[in-house]
Image 1 (cartoon, rainbow, N blue to C red):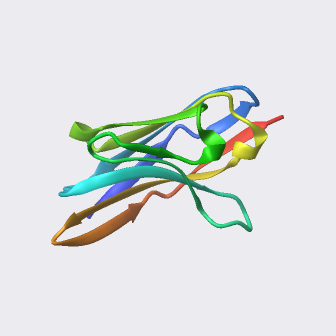
Image 2 (spheres, rainbow, N blue to C red):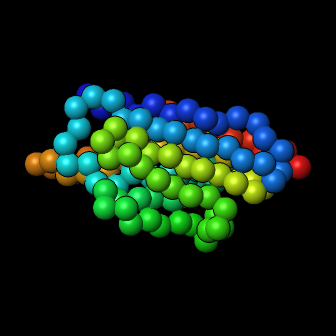
Length: 118
């Protein structure tokens, strides 16, 4: 059984910074892409950023230049450094891990709240 444990959310003023972390616990084989999604009430969950095992990154246009994703493959951990935060970044942020080991898998964290005050 794999569990994704997120940490680092909270309340910050506009222009401030936060760093989210997500660690995958349990035995996990074939892990490829880890990423962060976010969701606000009444809207669909959207991709914020993702990173493959070889370090290829992908960002939503709205966060390019302000947020940076990184990972530690040895620890199956992914990070999201969030700088120059805006009120519109307020959301629940979810960690995601995807891979393939005999069959595809897709795991989600429980979510962590990020609130940016104006």
